[in-house]
Structure formats: C-alpha cells, structure tokens
Image 1: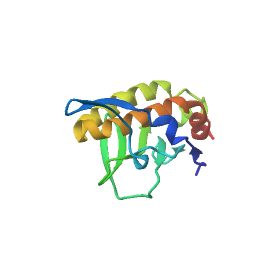
Image 2 (image 1 turned 30 degrees about the vertical axis):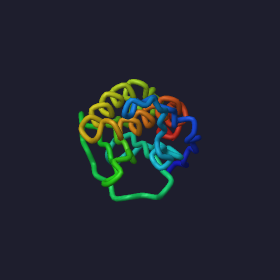
Image 3 (image 1 turned 90 degrees about the horizontal axis):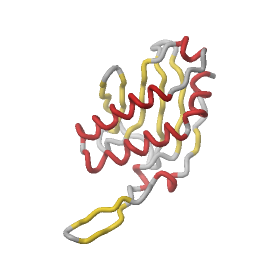
Length: 146
C-alpha cells in the first residue's frame, strides 16, 4: 500500500460567497469535509486505479455508487468521498500513461454524483476531491505506477 500524501486542508477550503436571507456572507466547508491526505495505487486483480481520501474524525461505513464503470465510495452518513476506482489497464500503468484524461471523465461523474446526493452540501466536497487529484496528479501517477 502506498504512503498517504499529506494535504494542507486550508488550501482546499476556499470561501464561497452566499446570500442567506438577504445577507451576503462567505462560507467555508467544515474541516471534517476537507481531506487531510490522499493516496493512489493500482489493483492488479481488478485492473483499477484507486484513489483514497483520508479525513479527520476517522472512518465511517461506506456506500458504493457506480457510474460509467467508475466506482465511488462515499460515507454512509456524511456522503464524503472516500475512494474512487477507475478502470485502468496494467499496460497503461507500465507506460506511465497520464491520468489527465481519466480525471476529465471523473470530473463529470463527480458533478453527476453531487446532483444525485445533495448538490448544495456535497458538491463542494467533490469539487475539492477533483482539485486535489488534478493538483497532485504527478505524485499520484507515480504512486499508481510503482
């Protein structure tokens, strides 16, 4: 299993402008909804590229959601994104193929997931996950191909 890559949660917890009852405010996500670490690896048995997110406050039971052959594991109660599984051949891993194309496809799946669950509350968590993956794609690609 690969090492967790530490993240700076403050970097990914950006203010969002909202208007609540006519009052303009800046809102931030709960620190419990912003990952503190990420890791990636390739599962040879299932031929899947797997990314996992770690949060403060420990784990919870997870529910799997499948969309376009991508499996997303979300917290049963919090709906936080814990795990992403993308079909990926071992040949692509050996070639050190870029994950950018899969991340574009994943972005669409995460947007769809947000609308299925709770668009207002969860979409920020899924956008953060997408941003983390795109910013750390080189390190994660190295982990997956190791």
